[in-house]
Image (cartoon, rainbow, N blue to C red; front, side, top):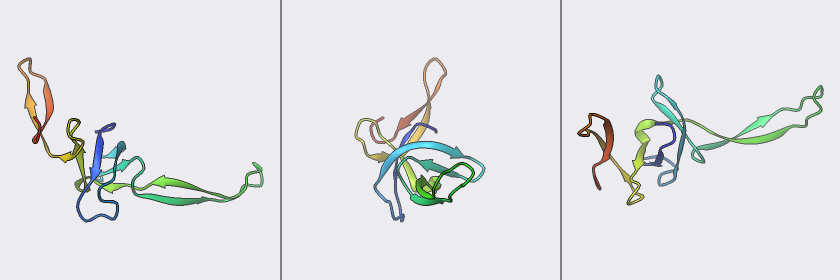
Length: 98
């Protein structure tokens, strides 16, 4: 979900990095994580606006299977499960710390 802290796992060059989810693309099963999977995008010069050419660092998408939620207590990646509270609300629960 947007705003969650996640860690990159599995066979990925940026394995171990943590960041906050900026955007979720459900149709493509991909997420953008802040500060992870960066690339440099070149912006061309525009004479009409008077700007020069420069580069901007941006985040690329990463498949959701390559990230795990970070447990707020242990600060380590964990799986989660859904649980219903007594009042009927549905919440996510860490499998490691509960």
